[in-house]
Image 1 (cartoon, rainbow, N blue to C red):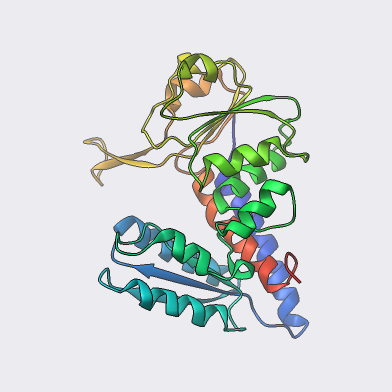
Image 2 (image 1 turned 180 degrees about the vertical axis):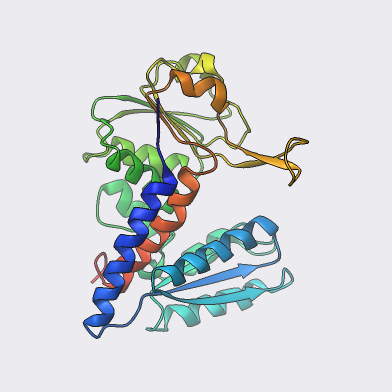
Length: 293
């Protein structure tokens, strides 16, 4: 069993991005600038945004952060998005989800200029991805693809099962795994809350990608011997064994599943770290006009 080490790969990618930023600046070009809008005080979102900002500075990016109270109006947020859309100094924009219930996520996503949509959620980017055209890939699926690529994991002709059909992970990774590319060319099955015989379907997977949002959902009897398992889940579980009072768990019961795997991502230290670095990779592409000219 080999760990798909997100910490190691994200560190490699961080260095690659930092070197490219240094090259841009030496050539007299501006530093990439990522704008983040956060509405409200969700603890998990705040931690994630702080990590994004920290990583931006580590690779030499500028960052522009806009924090609004949970009471901010939808119109106020949409006006700020339009302002950023029209600001040539800013290359990429993300609006941290989830948003307060009175603000429409779909309206917010559609208002972002698709050329600055480094989260890859705008319908134009989603549609281009589905058609196999150049686009900004959603960061978590992009991170999974990077891990598979950098560990030289064969995907062509493999049976890939994706647990979960969210627009953020499940649906886009299913498209990426079935596209004519490497990694890709897999035969993909998506399972979700209405699927029957999930255990039997998972047990046939050569590659199992789990983004179902339930801690330790996947047990050893659901995993084929020698499978590649990608665990996207991250959950804080109360624990008396740690000083913090909780443990971080994934959607996979790691200790019992890992011995059966050829490769598996740890939680933490797997896909989560790849998500942030792939977001910065998209921002670098935006700054260089490499997707949309």
